[in-house]
Length: 333
Image 1: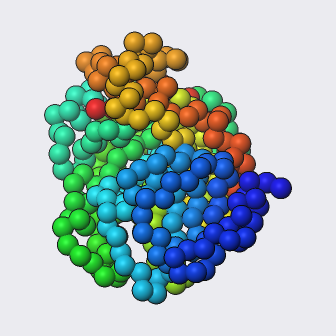
Image 2: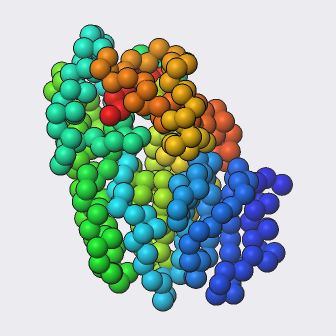
Image 3: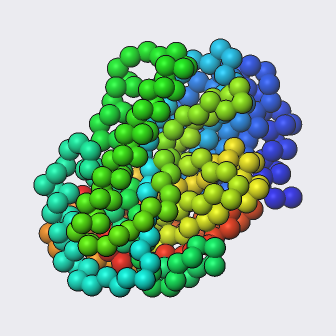
């Protein structure tokens, strides 16, 4: 019996919601659960392998509520609605002077920290990868480049916490904010194209904090992308760790058509700053701007995250890896 079957059976054998209906739990990595939110009307809970507990919804979760009588809780996703990753590719062009380019990109981002076209802090990043292995369906060759931009709505999401919404009002407002975040990532891509002097083409853009009305249910995705069978997304790890592009199998519907966006934090930010992981340096040669110290990035060191190889076995039922990416350089402010 696989993890999916075991957790589904456990739910059906007597984990009621507050409405008395059985709660379906899909938990491929079999994480112990800590539910810090009102579960009224909760019918399904998906726990992805990048699970990381939070104040309300944990990162790496999909929470499905019956739409009838559901009260929207903007605080469940907070103001980071629409945060996501844009993946862009560069075929057949070798990049030179990467260190100088990354320094110039970082300088531009530092000088323009606010508004559309700005990166943000925390674990938001722009990382240049090289394709180290790929299947034919990606149509990229090894040594081709992939640029990943992880950023959000740059302040537009704060308004969802300033008023009360009915369900439709919240869905409309968050759709606008998701679009704002998408435009922000495109503006960042425009800057990268100019500085790299390279025509990176958009492969896909996947938000991983969103709410969706789906077949009479309200689906909250916290740190999880919406992904239908055949669609592609990227799963990143740490600033110095490999990433994979995956294609969804038909079994993705068991996860409420959702997928991890990363591997998940295992060391809290406050603890990471005390552990001084930055003193060990990066485990593989990934260039970071000369004027941004690793101490500044102490809470984002590779030791703070699971590796991609720790997570992938739990996702084998749901997605097929089609490309493995090795990081070359990364900007994180």
